[in-house]
Image (cartoon, rainbow, N blue to C red; front, side, top):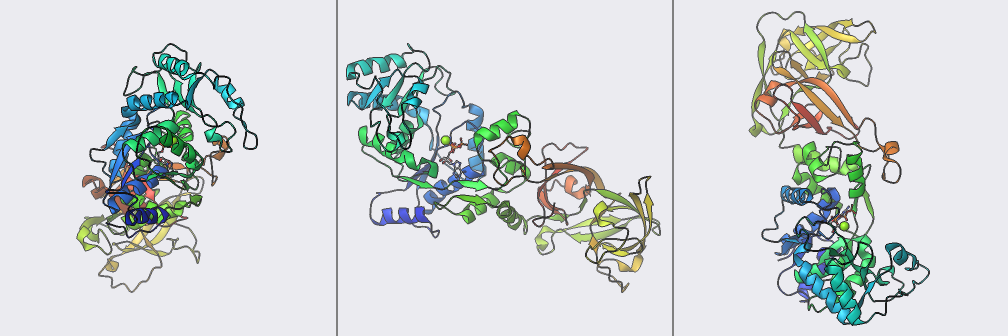
Amino acid sequence: MSSSVSDFIRNRIRDDIENEVVDGTIITRFPPEPNGYLHIGHAKSICLNFGVAEEFGGKTYLRFDDTNPLKESEEFVESIQQDVRWLGFDWEDRLTFASDYFDQLYSFAEQLIEKGRAFVCDLSAEEIRATRGTLTEPGSNSPFRDRTVKENLDLFRRMRAGEFDEGSRVLRARIDMRSPNIHLRDPVLYRIVHAEHHRTGDKWCIYPMYDFTHCICDALEGITHSLCTLEFEDNRPLYDWVLDNVSINFHPPQIEFSRLGLEFNVMSKRILTSLINAGHVEGWDDPRLPTISGLRRRGVPAEAIRDFCSRVGVTKQANLIETNLLDFCVRSTLEDTSPRAMAVVDPLPVTVINFEGEDVTLEAPNHPKNSELGKRELTFGRNLFIERSDFRESASKKQRKLTLNGLARLRYGFIVECVEVVKDGQGSPIELKVRYVPESRSGQDTSGLKPRSTLHWVSATNSISAKFRLFENLFNVREPGSGDPRDELNPTSRIEKDGLVERVVVDDDWERCQFERNGYFIKDLDSTPMKPVFNRIVPLSSGVH
Ligand code: ATP
Ligand code: MG
């Protein structure tokens, strides 16, 4: 089996299959740490790992990297599974946890001690840092480096038995304090943490570090291509060292690709967590966040995220992607499948002064091109609403608006002429009085009039009130995350408007739809039977807010 997509990772896999470097099946893994919710950067890694396995007829593990009980929880484990599934991927029976391997990891650590390749070190974290050296200067050996195997084994077993305080001792690899690669300067392999683990409870009070755990789990699972982001490039020699020094006869290659960055967004779980804790956003699923749960609540379809990831592609170049690309993917996913309706986000009442009697029933297609989406009825009567921003008292060449004494067509309805503007004490319009042209009915227009503008509208009888949430970028700066978030946040990232929506959208429980000229929307879970709430997924074109 092969793949039609081409990038350096897929090319490498094709070569490995052709040259029989791998026998049998391609096996990948997605290894999240359950210390937060997934974001669109993770989606890139998910699409890559599950994507290549699918394309080459392989398999993918969802493996939780749960080696830090202080930061990890079951809530995150659950949300991550939900998000991967929602993105459209299936790990089948390959759900694993690094903690499943704690016993094996422990015996590999004893192996290293027995070979003289690991030692128990009593230096404090600070002392270890201080003796590690710098990029230009070598580190210095720990005074505990030459303990005997017997002493090391004894101390390590007593670390495991809980005899020592947190931070008092660690297990370190015995590699080379003079290595030009800082990761090889006797890195810490195990530390003492007296904390309850969400899966292993209080069985362990020593926990393996990422660099020791990850490569061994990869090898035990038979991962044929261990794909990770570029910041792990310098860890690769350590990945290889561990596997070369424990007795496992399988050695996956680690292959690095660049992280996804999205303009005006942060991806760091640490910063996301602090935004939530400080109340700058309402939770992990706030529609302004680039989290999968935020994007889902915003209304972004999983298909659009997959399309986005495939357009971004996989390279080793640093990439900060424009939010426009994501918007483009969302629009092109929704364009053909979303029914249209009309909503007025910021209503200005309109009285049709020459309209008398029963409302007129009109018909409107639910999609201009896709007739399979059907039709719906609209009613036209004496009391209507248009968008406040669609009225301007005097005409301007550029703007297509209704003006005093001007004409406009109300979409699928009639042409109206504005004959009077009623204003409040401040001079703002509070009502328009218009006359409609009875022979201008849409589809049967014999009026001969050609107004320049067509406006969306609703009538008092076929609309209900609704709240609309309009979103902009959460941050004002292109690459946020370095300063105080309060200086970088966009104060208008979420604006709420009270408006009106065609009743049918709520009565028939439409999922996602386009409100003509306003954008694509989805009903939010804050909706109540009395007051639906709609999130704007994306406006109809970029730059329109
Ligand atoms: P953070 O640094 O915010 O804690 P992380 O990278 O440590 O995030 P993990 O849960 O360890 O988060 O990530 C799981 C996998 O997702 C890793 O293989 C990681 O390389 C990948 N990943 C994380 N962020 C991105 C990103 N922005 N682009 C591509 N892949 C990513
Ligand atoms: Mg990580």
